[in-house]
Length: 115
Image (cartoon, rainbow, N blue to C red; front, side):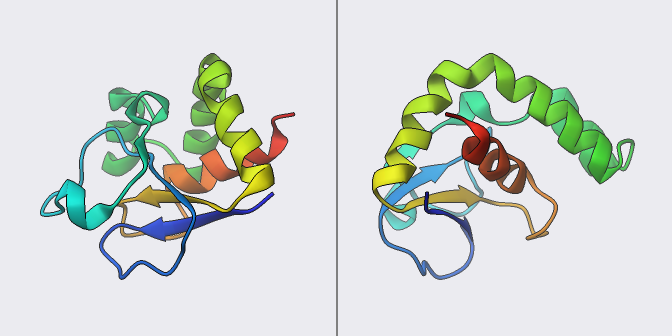
């Protein structure tokens, strides 16, 4: 399974199927320049979870646990993406500044656990 992570504000390094995984379209980025094949905003963290995490009301571990619980409700949407990643490279696109603590990191972990 090949799943890569890439920040939308950096020069694209990866080929393959590209999926934006944020609920909100990234500021200052046109659809043409992002060149995403799909936008899965429905699998992004809920607005409240995202706000609580960015406000510092949740630790990374609390955010991760809560988001993994939310992702279980989207299993049917995510299963085809996990299957695609078994056959070709998939790049999850995100806007967060922190490369280690964002929803794409958690989503990648979840996709690797789907069978």
